[in-house]
Length: 400
Ligand SMILES: *Cc1c(COP(=O)(O)O)cnc(C)c1O
Image 1 (cartoon, rainbow, N blue to C red):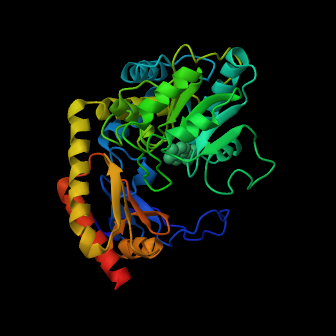
Image 2 (cartoon, rainbow, N blue to C red; image 1 turned 180 degrees about the horizontal axis):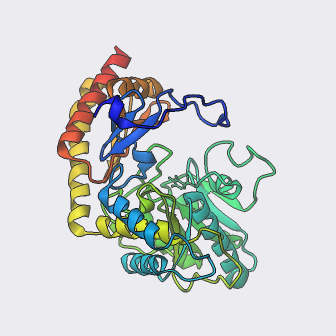
């Protein structure tokens, strides 16, 4: 497709009216299709960021276009104080898939985590009156609202906009003994990501979640999993926790759930759910338009053949990265499903990312020496092959 057919709107290229929150490249994205994105000058990019692990089915997939079209002709929103059919169907489907009992929908991962934290605090008021603390992990990421920032383990984030929200205690990720030591009479819950995403795809020891489940049950505290990034098939199972054969008390979903539209969810067991009328709300919570899309995405991703194809594609990414490991000077390759990271031998990740974009490949550099890949879950074999050769080229060009 050429530049002339990519857009009929004239493109405004003045960013001065935006608050300066990110150093973005000057290209303006105007169209997407599957694993590809086009900018306003007609340049095509192979997209291994996909809206930040959001576009589970790639750009503008027919399932989402159909759900949006049909639902927008039927009912966009009645009011959060009234039931609507897509919300009820989505809640039912997510409880079936998770084995948990109840769901509340929000609009972003941060908000879903806020709901989880509120629920844990309310649960504490009833069951652990001395409790006031949630244990989270170093380098974790839980979002950008003030409380989600306080829960987040990025250095300095808890006090960046002080006064900080209280009630979080941080321990190293992947270390069960550190959690055991940190638990006290004040502890309400442990909250963490099954694989740390923003930290650079940090995979914990294989038995970590099982040990965590045992530990939290033994101490009578809640296990909260932030599956905003790992959920909805990203790791090859609908929920990451399925791979450890455990059931958490509370789970949050976001990103992939809407496949590109804003919707998130907080799932809970009925024994952890202690909200009463008025404790939680939100104008757009479970609105039919977003819920219809999330239901279409969920039904597609939850199919066993679809999840098997994620595992297969993930294996292909792993094999390809392992093959280029020596020539590209990679020190570590790690990941699961379709969430992968590679460590460069020097802190050139930003440069590699910029060079890759010049070559027509979008990747992410979450840390100075780390490149992260999060393609669409329906990425094809040849798209993976193309991405790997462009990535190798970008690394060679940058480190030469
Ligand atoms: C992205 C992310 C969030 C925050 O989601 P937003 O939709 O940006 O608010 C929270 N937790 C994890 C694990 C994430 O990856």
